[in-house]
Image (cartoon, rainbow, N blue to C red; front, side, top):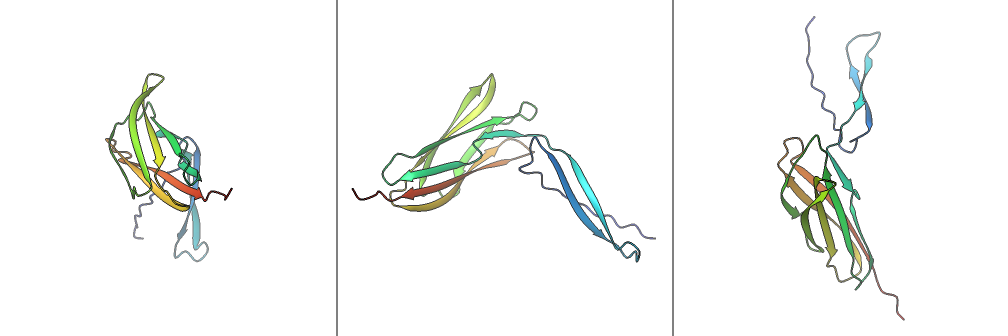
Length: 151
């Protein structure tokens, strides 16, 4: 019979340094076994270490609220951050600095809340890299400002 070729693409984001297992159902015109499962599994290499995974900007209105995220490229996949920008940038300001982390290049991302009223917000800082593997790294920023209690 005819041979059909399909391409199966698996998203490994979030699995760095862990084992991944995904199942794909394949449907055929075989009456006895119309569906068969393909299992794709294996270790996923880590590209970058990000601590913490995202920035939590929580506190009371008027208080200084800051967060620091450390970005450390894995030795096997070195990269440089070429550019950065906030997705929205309305409620945060940030500074990105290249540092050293036990002789390896690392980056420190200092984020500061500039929202002045109570409420929630979501933003992301997009880091553009010189890596073909991962040209962009997104750092999520979650903000939650509580109103001051009346004294």
